[in-house]
Image 1 (cartoon, helix red, strand yellow):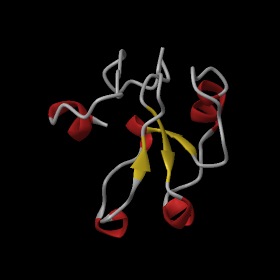
Image 2 (cartoon, helix red, strand yellow):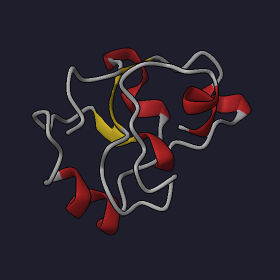
Image 3 (cartoon, rainbow, N blue to C red):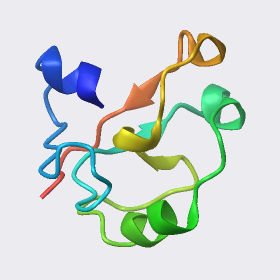
Length: 83
């Protein structure tokens, strides 16, 4: 999420700056990559219920996706609205 904000990727609002308090960094992980990301935690799960765009099985908070070598090439899609 921080990399997306730093590079001006449109659609990532990140009102809380990555503190997992707002759900305005909601993204959809591409179908081919869903199995590669860690499971959704309890707090993230609760926040995903409050996203502006519909939640799906591929929904994640960008602030919780930590880029590692294993996630090299990860594709995420940004919803049309975060607010």
